Each structure stands twice: as structure tokens, then as C-alpha cells.
Image (cartoon, rainbow over all chains, first blue to last red; front, side, top):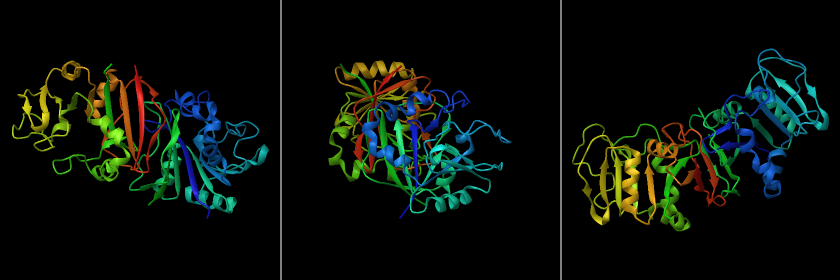
Length: 199
Length: 199
């Protein structure tokens, strides 16, 4: 049966982005160089993990992950990822500002959902069919879905860095229980920890 | 050469004790059952880790780890650990309230240090001789020693639990760098992560 997954690269002190996010520095200060080193420097040692991150049939993300803008849309903005984003699937972007769908190269279409996280999940599930749905981030979006009991499998990728501030994951979740799936794995650049989420 | 170590059992959201610590519940709500399960349920799978925790020749702890009292001493209080504490070595307790040393069975003596974390470290180093010094906790004490650059090796033992509040480790550290020592290890009950701390 398909499930809802969530892969997050996190610092040891619990942040998924550093302080002062901006157009020039979308992950905030200090984060870009540290949180994802394992992906770029040793991808061959994390093949299964990387395949798991991109395997979903549909993705959900918060507006702040889609772009730096707030309020009314700048229609020239089409995401951080260039003409061919790495999703290759429908991506549902949570926002309070309606916008027409945006079709990119390579199979990615951004749909803008204005009626909340449950509606976005319903649309993503329908789009994904028998495939998994992935909640892609950022922290606030993931925290909301975890608190609502709508994520089945949380996969944390903990990097050996202390950011000291930024966007905190695993915050304001209420009472949720995590059941480990397998033992920790990884390398000196990252610890992979996978949990079934029970609410 | 001997070093200063620090072993801490931590929740996934970064707490080493839950909210509302008390005499009845020294680790706060929810923490006791979760953070240390691996120690009690499967000690044989963590032999080297457990030996590392108790190997030091001297220990340092904050007053709140020694007992629930604040302010002037209740001289009847001799720690949480009964007649024979598990340290079997000198333990230096940070406090602003002077107290005579307290000798327990099995080689543990509690010394009460009123002149700060550096003085306590100097005394612990001298007492340990060629052995390591361990900073035993709690969160505030460890954070102070990390921020001061006085811990050489940080060994985190991350349990699959979200506490949602309590005593937060890795907070207010300023700029410190962690260099992983080996790959992650552990079981479904705990991820062991070891870092050299560089300041």
C-alpha cells in the first residue's frame, strides 16, 4: 500500500534551515554547505536513500520552500530549481494566494493549493495513485503534517553540524510516537534514521 | 593523552530531560521510559558504549543533576544513586553553595565546587590523572562546557522519542564545529553518534 513519506536533512540541533533565509541563501546561513554534503560528496554511498527521496508519485511543499516571496504572487517566479525541477511529478504547493498550475520540463507541474493541508494531501494522493506521496518541506509544513497524523514514515538525515538557529523541525507536534524502522545507518557525513509515525 | 568526554542520551528533538523535573521524576515527564531503554533492555548490544560512559577517572556534573534542591543545601541529600553511586571516582558538583565533600561507597566522592566550570575542570583533570574526565550533565552544564571549548569528544545517544519540551542540549553554543568520529552505529532503540569538538 502506498504511504506518505517525509525525508528531511536536519542539523544535530534540530534545524532544517539556518537563520536569515533569503533569495541568495535559500537554506539560510550555514546550512547549504553542511546539511547536504553527503548527497553531493558521496552519493554512491547513499543510493537507496536518494532513490527513496525522489520515488514519490506526488509531492507537497510549503510556499516558503517554493520561493522567497510572500503575499501576492510574482508570476515570474517558477521555483528554485530551474526549467527542469528534480521532482518529475506533480508538486502541490500550500499557499493562501491562488495561482494557475505551472508546468515545467521533465514532468514536474506545480499546483497551488489554497484550501489547507488536508485538501493538498487528498489531491496529492489522487495524483500519486499507487505511488507514495512525499511531504518535501519545509519545517513548518512538515510539523503541521506530523501533528495532524498525516505522515506515515519520517526519514531523518542528520548532518554533523550545529546551526544554532533557523527553522526547527519536530516542534509543536503534540503527542506523537515514533517506531524505528531498522537500525541507524550512514557515514561520517550523515546518520539516516527512519521511523514509522503513530498518532 | 587523556581527553574530556561527554555522553548524553538525547531525544530526537534535542532534549536530555523532559518537562517538569521533580523529586519523583528526576528526568522530567516522559524521559525516563524512553531515553535510556537501550541501556536497560539490550545492554549487551552496547557494551563498548556503556564502558565508555563509565571509564572516566573523574566526573563533573551540575547541581541539578545531583539533586532536586536549590539554594542552601539539605545535608541529608546525597544524590539520586543510593549508597553506592555508579561513578566509582571523584565527582565534582558545580554549585554556588559550599559543602564539605561527601564520600560514598565504592569509590565515589562528591566534591562541591563553587568557583566555576574552569576551576571544576582543573580539579577533575588533576583527580583523573592519565584517565579521561567526563562531563556527566545536565544540559545546561554540558552546553556551558561546549561553549567554552572544554569538551573534546561529544557522544550523543539519540533515542526514538519526541519529548516536546524540557532541558535542551546543544543550545547557545556559539560557533563550534563537530568532526565525526566514525560512522553512526546503534540499534532501533538508539543511534550512537560521536564527534570531536573543535572550537
